[in-house]
Every structure is written in structure tokens, then in C-alpha cells.
Image (cartoon, rainbow, N blue to C red; front, side, top):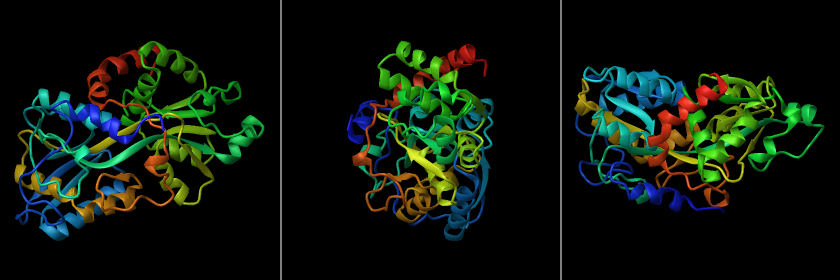
Length: 343
């Protein structure tokens, strides 16, 4: 293994604004005392799992959750546009986005009990609350791959995707709009160790792209239906379509990135207590297992089972993905990507 998940998280733990919440309030599966009311949840989570979680939370707490599902990039833009008059109480985001948002006073600190949460995924400052681990992967349509490459072995590294016979046959999310797409780009920067090497790879990768999608989940669907031979996607999106019976292979390119995903409380939100109750509930064992079962992402709790068909974390070759640096460089990298590739 190139690095362990411990090393991935360790860099973030050393920076105060990022990794995750410590003791206050009552954790576990019990929602804090509250009844009735409505809160608004902005989330990049797939719509059906988000709806199921909202329904389960309402059944236990009496609080209704209005769900707005968009890509991570769209949600961050919406949050910034609503600064000073927010409509959301809770926003789902990747760990690297928490620091900049905290500095802009767009999210607020909250420190629930974190029983059962791996301590690597607990933010001492309480700005961000881990719910799942998401891995950067590639989905391959087995039939189209054989057709386009003449039956070549499936790729095991990112560089093995740079095949001339795949021109127009790759699909990926637009990193200026999608958190999935941006994670892919950041993964290339971290695995090369500098932006120069990453842009050299991305220049070649761009030549093979048939489509940049607006959302992170779209490539898995397009590969599953055979419109493209391969596509960049998070592991949980690919596990979902494979579970539906599509001929798709899940590839963990060496080395790949892992993102810690979760939720934050919006500063000045309409229902601050309801939002805190929901964030706390989402970290409980019941909600965490629901997320694994519905989304197929990796858990941050030690008492929750891995998704079916997922490769164990100990078996993976991971980059030293620095979520703090990823958040800090996102705007500049996105602008450069748009300039280079016209997206």
C-alpha cells in the first residue's frame, strides 16, 4: 500500500479547522430532544438514499427534512450566494471544503459526542462531521472495453488509461461543477507531487474524453449503459450500478484518492437546533449503516459493516490526499482546468 488511511487523515488532523468533532451533547442513535418543525438539508448524496435518511430521522425526531440534492460544486456556490440569508440548515460537503467555509463564517462549530467514530475522523473544532469515506475509482464497461481495446487487460493504474484507442471513449465529471471531478484532479496533483506533472497527465487524459458531465454520478450511468468504455467515478456510484446488474467493472487505480465526506451546520440557519439534532443523528450507528447500505460508501464508524462488493481499505494503494490543501487550491485549480479544456 502506497500509504495508509491513517496517513491520509493524519495531515488533516494537525490543522485545526478540519478534521472532526469531539465531546458535547448526546451521541449514538438517539436524536436530541426536539419535536416537530422543519429543516433544510443541502446534500450531494444520491436522491433516494437522502430521502430515506430524511424519512427515518423524521420518524424518530418528529422533524421534517426538506432535501435539496445537487452536485457538491453547485451546493457550495449556492451556500456562498445565500451568505447572510441562508435557506439551508445543514450542508453535505467534503472535508477539504470545511476550512475555507469556516473562515468565511458560512458554517458554524458544533461538538456532538462522537462515540463509535474513528478518532481520525473527528474535528477538534467541530466545524465538520464525518459520515462516510469515498474512494476515487474508474468504472469500465467490460463489453465496450473489449471492443475498443481488442481485449486488453483492465487498467491497474491511472497511466494505463492513456491509450490512443480510447479516444472519445472516456467520461468524467466537470471538476468546476462536481466534487467527484475535482477529487479526480486533486488526486492527480497529489500522486504526482506537483501541479506540473498532474497537468501533463491531464492534458493527455483530456484528449480521450468524450464528455464532461455536470454531476459526479452521471459517468457511472453512461458507462453502465455502454455509451462510454470507461469513466471516472466514486466507488459507491459504481457499486450501485453494478448491483443493478449492469456489466461494469470497478477499478481502483494505483494510487488513488480517498475523500472524507459528511455534513456541516450552516451559520445563521433558520432552524439551528433542528440542524444540530440531524447532524448528531447522522453520525449514529443506525444512520451510518443506512448510508453504507443505501449509498455503498465506506463507514467512518468502527461498528458498521463495509458495503457488499467493496474492496477492503487495507488492500488499497492510496495517495497522500491532503483535504486541507485540496480545499485551499480548489478555486485556482478549477479555473485552470476551465481555461485549459474549455469547460
